[in-house]
Length: 47
Ligand SMILES: [Zn+2]
Image (tube, rainbow, N blue to C red; front, side, top):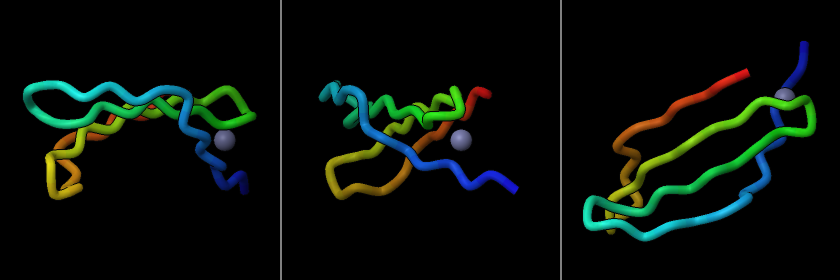
């Protein structure tokens, strides 16, 4: 069973929070949206 190893590719502050794009060597991508207190608001994983 593969366990993703997320590597942050880029980080963008927005009015809603910080959007972080990460990817795994297997090709999966994840997009995280966190507010100023680092609470996770949304997460999207694409494989
Ligand atoms: Zn992976």
